[in-house]
Image (cartoon, rainbow, N blue to C red; front, top):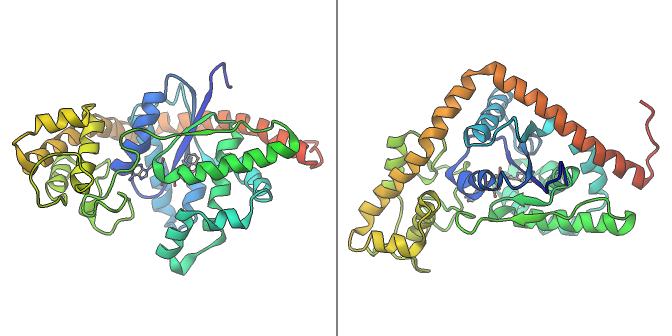
Length: 334
Ligand code: TYM
C-alpha cells in the first residue's frame, strides 16, 4: 500500500519506438487502471543494455518513451514516471535477488532462449539474468499488480517465486505481485505473419504498426495485412490473421467479436482491413499530437523526470534498506 492505495507497477524497454502491441497489450491498460491504483511506471533503460545500443539514439529513445507514456494519458504529476537507471536500488536489489534465484529457473525462461537465438553473437550474462532485474524492479516498489502483455507472464511467475522464497526465510519483506493481463490485446500478432508476435525488432516494416506511424502508413499496413483465402469476417481458430485484426479492432472500438461480425456481414476483408486501419489511426492521432508537444517542451519533461526520479528513489530506498538489514549486511552510516 502506498498513500492508501494498492501499488501498480510496470514499464517498457527503452529500445526503438513502441508498437501497437506495446500499446494495446500494456500502455492502454495502464491508462484504464490508472485511477484505481497508486501507479509507478519505469523507463526500463537498464534492460535495454542487454542488446547493444548506439548511445545517442538510445538516449533519445528513452526520452521518447517517457513522452509516449505521458502522451498516452499518464499524468506525470499524479503518477511516478521515472528512469530505471536513475534509481540505483534496482541494480543493488537485483544482485541480492540473484543470490535467491536458481540457474535452473533462469534456464527455463522462454524469452531468454528466443533472444539468445536472435542475438547469437552476444549471449551475455545480462540477457540471462534479465528476469532477476525485472523482479527487483517490481519488488522494490512493493507492487500489488503488474499490467503486462502475455509474453511477460513467465517473468511475473519467477518474480513471485523469488519473493516467496525470500519471504520464507526473512518474513514478510516483499508484497507478492499479481500479473494483470488484458482480456483482449494481450498478444497482438505480426500483420505479415499472424503466428508471430508483433515486435519492434521485426525486419519486415509492414509487420508492425509503430505508435508514431502517420495515418497513411497505418492504413497501408493494414490493407496489406496477411489473412486467409476466405472472405467472411468471423472469429475462428482457423483464421489467425482475421482473429488478430478483430482483436485490434475490438480493443480500439470497444466492440465485442459478435458485434464486429455483424457489422461486417457480407462486406468482405477489404472493407474490414480499411476500417481497422482507420480506427487505429484515429486512436493514435491525439496521442501523436500530444507527443510532439511534449517533445518540444524540454523544461516540462526535464522537470517531471527529475521530480519523479527523486520520488522513486525514496520509495526504492525504503525497501532496499529493509532487505539489506534482513540479510545481515552492515548498516551504513552515511
Ligand atoms: P517490453 O518492452 O518488451 O514490452 C512492454 C510491454 O508491452 C507488451 N507487449 C505486447 N503486448 C501485446 N502484444 C504484443 N505484440 C506485445 N509486445 C509487447 C509486453 O508484454 C510488456 O507488457 N521485460 C519487460 C519490461 C520490464 C517490466 C519490468 C515490465 C522491465 N521491468 C517490470 C513490468 C514490470 C519488457 O521487455 O517489455
